[in-house]
Image (cartoon, rainbow, N blue to C red; front, side):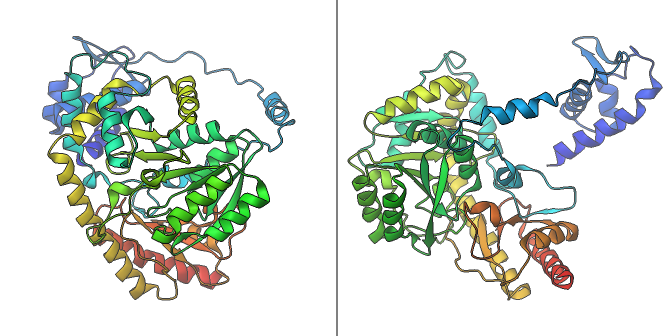
Length: 480
C-alpha cells in the first residue's frame, strides 16, 4: 500500500514540474530522482511509466525520460447518435431482450473516494492477500520449461488434477476445465446450458454478477426464495414445474449474500428435484477457501454427491488470493462437458499458461496452507468486530445470520427505510456500503445492506465504519 501511494505522490510532483522543461527536453536521471525524493528506483520507474501512459513523457531505454512533444489538434468529435437506433434494433427480435447492466457488479469493483471506508469491497484487502507467495510463485512459474508455450485448451493436467481432488467424489481431472475466474466460468456455464429467451432459476436473493450474466445472455432469471437452511426445495420444485426451466444456479456453501449453508437434508432433495425436471444445477462454490477459524467441518460440494451429471461445478482461487489472480475451474460429467469446452475455446481460447503455472506453484507451496489458516483467523476476528459494533451502535438493524465463512454480513433494515437514501447518506458520512436491491431478481420484501469486512485495512477501520454508518442512519431518518 505504501509503495502504491509513493508512486502516485511522485507522479504528481513530476507532473507539476513538467513546465520547467521544453518539449523534448530531458528530465533528471532516475538516480537523481531517487536521491532527491528519497524513494526507491522501483517507485521512480513506476511513476515515469505512469506519466508515459498519460502521454506526458517519453522514455527511451539507455537515454532517459523526456518531456513529450505537444499533441496535434485534439480528436475530432463525431456523431454517434446513430448507435441508439442500431443497438435498440439489435434486440428487437429477442424473446427476452438482452440488458447489459453491470451496475450491481461495479458496486464491489469500484474503488471508493479517498478517506471513505470500504464496506462494499468484494475481495481481500491487500494486507490479507498472499502477495509475497504469489510473487514468488509467479517468478518460479516463469522459469518453468515451456512456461510461455501454448497450454492445452482444457488447462494444465496437474492443475486440473488439483481442482478435481478439491471437489472430491468421482470427479476426475478429465472432467475439469481451467477458466479465467469464476465470473467467466459462470458465463460459460449459462451460455452452454440455456438458449436465449429461456428461464433460469436463481436463489433469491443472489449474486448480482450472476443476474447480470443471465440478462446479458437474454435469459429470464426466476427467483426461488432461500431461508437460513438454503434454497427451499418445495418452492424449487414448484418453479421447475411452472417455468419448464432446465437450469438452477445456486451457492450451497455460504450463499451470497445471506451466508446460508444448504442443510444436509436438502442436498439430496435439490439434486433429485433437478434430475426429475431434466435440469442442470450450476453450483457456484465461490468461497470455500475463505472459511472462518470457527467454521468446523465443511459439507462437501454438491458435485461430489452427483453421479448422474446433474451438477456443473464452479470454483475459483481468486477470492482467496487476489482479484487479479483469475484462475478457476468448471467441472461437469457427460456430454455437457464438450459443450462447455467448446464455448470456452470460442470465447477465450485458454487461460494464459504462466498464470496456470503460477497457480500450481502457489497451491503446492508451504505458504498456501499457512495463508489459508491466517486468513481464517483474521476473517473471524473481523466478523466478530463488525457484529459487535453493529449490535452496539445499530441495534435497530436486524442481523439474521452470522456466517462461519465468507467476507460480509447481510443486514435487514427496519421497515420503511429508504435503502438508496441510506446508501447515499453513508457515502457522505465516509463509508461505502452495498445496497440490497441488486441482489433480487424481483421486488424484495424488505430493504437490506451488505457490509464487507474483508476489504478494509483493520478492525479499527471496521469500528469506525460502523460509527459512520450510525451517523448516516440518523441523517437518513431525519430526511424521511
